[in-house]
Structure formats: C-alpha cells, structure tokens
Length: 208
Image (cartoon, rainbow, N blue to C red; front, side, top):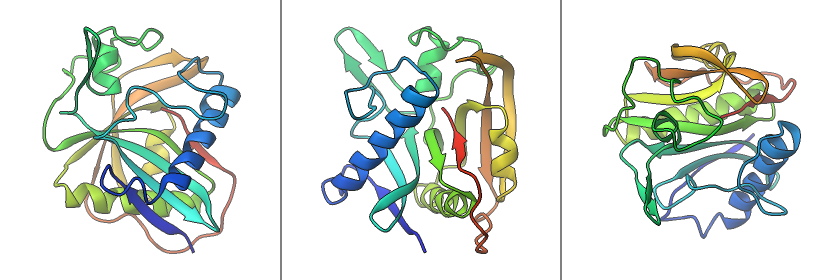
C-alpha cells in the first residue's frame, strides 16, 4: 500500500527527504527525458512555482516516491526583482514564460480566485499510484474548498483523469510544446476518485 502525503510549508521539514526525491525525479522526467530547458541544478528540478504557497501531493512506498503533483492557488504571487509571478498558466498568458504560447487558455481570462488552483508536475509509477495520488488531491481540494483545477498538460491527460473519476474538459486549442501536443484543461470532481485496488502497469507520465 502507498502512504499518501500532503506537504505544505507547515510540515515540509518533516518530509524533506521525500520532497527532495520528488524534485530529483522531476529533473529526470522533465529535463532529461522530455528535454525541457527548465531551471535545475545538477540533481533536482525546481522553479519559481516551488515556494511557500506550493502544496506537494506525494505517494510513497518503501521510502520512495511513486507519484507526485504540485498544487498552487491561483491567488498566489511572488516578486523576483521587478517581475511578479503568480501561477504558471497565468504567467504564460502574460508572455512571461517563453516557449509556452500565451493563447493556451483560449478566450478565457486566467482566473485568480479562491476556489481555483493549478496542478502541474504530475507523474505516477502506475495506475494504482495514480489513483492514490488523485484521491489525495480530491480530498485536499475539498478541504480547502477548491472547486476547479487547471492544468497545461499533454492532451491525453484529460482521458486519464476521467478514467479515475474526475471530470475534465479542454479549454483552449492544442499547441506544440517540446514537440508534443499540449492543451489546457479544467478539472472538477463530484466526489473521491475510484479507490478500488488495481494492478500496476506502465508509468503514467503527465507533463506540465
């Protein structure tokens, strides 16, 4: 069985080793395998959206992270010098992130609202870990009274999360990112995702 962990700025010190393991795996996936030119050190991947307001959802077994996701409220903001960043998708629409088209949300303005969060940097080692990950995400979103999750991700991501009980709809056109088709999606949930145990299969890699 997996341990399902919600890491906030209040308990990050307790789970420092697992947070570091997930940052290391992010570097392996997003930089080394997918070839993204993103901020990283020799061992981990970390950017301006990893900060105090960030919440990490981790699925761990045997001391190793087998699933992870990064959550950020759309009201979050931080300044680096004269530049203010909020969350990844909004910053892309403002032209602050070269490589991500500003049109990813189509005609929809990038929201900044209490009940809307962004999810990014998602990976799971198999379907079982994926279910555990999104069960934890749904529970946490209900705890903070969120009603919608936004993601800029590979276009098959919506079908994957629908298969475990989330509602997902594309918002905006498909765009090329890193040589792969990506799109923005909106996710909602009517309750906890499916929790029945399933056999593990190939890794579920959902970039964003």
